[in-house]
Image 1: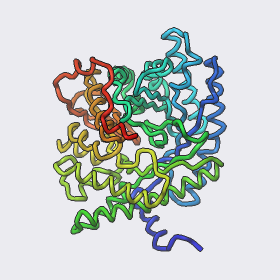
Image 2: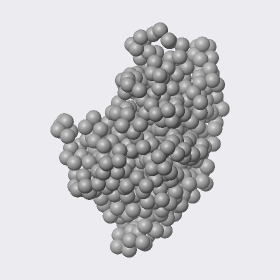
Image 3: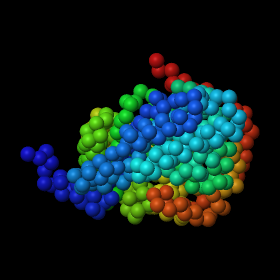
Image 4: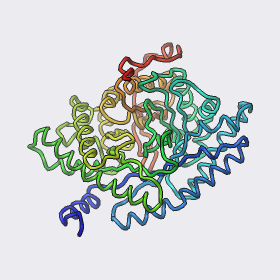
Length: 456
């Protein structure tokens, strides 16, 4: 006897067919710690063999699960051990150029494995440098411009701050320079790079996914979606008060999350690996109606970005978390509501009409995940300004003990429209404050952890 009623089944069909419900990603986390070798070529061979063996059936099993449950799985992805952790041994003593070439070679190996398996993205070209740099992490960060622009499917994330340790401003300054260098080679490379505070080790979403400490050898993590579903439900509640909106979002998030866990456990069982978490985040796309901004507008805002937007987003994020937490005990990753500008058609519309700008977006990141995401700024933006933007976001994450990040793309001139294509979408180039932050960020050092970090 089915545990689902006919009404529930039909409701799910409507969500899939008319409201863009999907499983946004099934991401396999893979440990590469056993791949380390003093010889960089041997290590690359070990990495390729490990990934292609463990994830060899990821795509085929995902397709089988899609057919079984009738729900699309949009992305099949892999996250690996932060590569910065693996480079010390094989690249110790190498010249600067040799070291960068060695690191880029590893990125190309990751890319080759991803293409062999026909997965969408592979994350983990990453480093955790919130308190300082190892030799391998320094090499990896300096290799990012070449690594991300000479590969197609490799994603990179750098954690520069935590609530417990503060903000590594030397790393923040360096990342401003790295982002500018990457954009100079190819702005799309910046879409595959995120700078974090409090990066979670089980995030299934790109560009921030990596396989962190404390995780199983191999694990399946799931990222759900559903902005279109939430919007459709709320659009029928014109006269409801905000408490009733919250309750409705909770119930909707419960249904979406239950489907996510069902898919994740099915995938884990088929692949004989552990099931990890469901990330509850509402992840928009450029498709019409699949927008977090549009949800906020259905609540009663004329345009996303006007006064009241932060409050509306706080309600949405909290209700999504409450509903999701009732559906599964295995929540993780980012779990909130993404506001990636270029990937959200409603955000792009709000930017076009002047309803939203970087200051309002920054305020919104205090109540949602994950931060200033997929924002396009002028191509001539000074690296120090980019670093200062990163520092502001890290401060929000550090003080509020939450994940924040910056995925920023310097391209074009203010007011121009830059198109990236596919799920990356496109966006007008956003204006920035014209006054300099250079002296502040060049001071370097570490911004100390806030007092609430001492909870032990």
